[in-house]
Length: 270
Image (cartoon, rainbow, N blue to C red; front, side, top):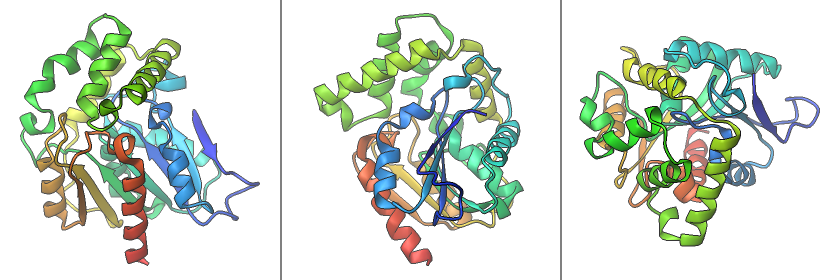
């Protein structure tokens, strides 16, 4: 199981919390950018684990699963390999948030708290809100069709970011990094399709998981309608915080805002 560990000092006992960060469709742990460092700065006594789903990142030669349940099983194997014996805190984006929901539903004792960012669940919203129609061609061509990697990553950034794209230097640096990741660890079209199938099939659990959750969304998300996060928050009576201008990838656009909201929420929980 591939993963990266921040701040492991001879065991878990010295750490206040253990965080697991889960990315979205066909993305890998490096796509978090500098967000793990920002989270670490807010919680210097905590430990942060980064993880790749099968088919992504260093695991790009593996076959992606076609169900969220199987993704949870793989994630739990990774956690066991880290010799972690206490509940973890989760930051999960998009597809990763679906995995977090299923994990909490099946094994709530393993999850201390979860932040669900820019996600959507079948059974709460129609398909045209879960993936906005203006993105259909770009998403499916990026997943399934051959093409220039830089063009694909530039298109991806345009759809998931609103703030980074306003800074030409930061935008070019981000695209350069993403192109390098795609060249080093290319996600196959078949694996992309399998992950998309898992996301579209996953339905909202009938019962709210017995784990504290915070919902995050952006009013300016161009990939998934913020109505999806609003509906989930209302359905399970969960707290929700909303960014006014960030794109779908809120940690990319405004990681400091995400960390501040997490810190305030955890303080309220305690």
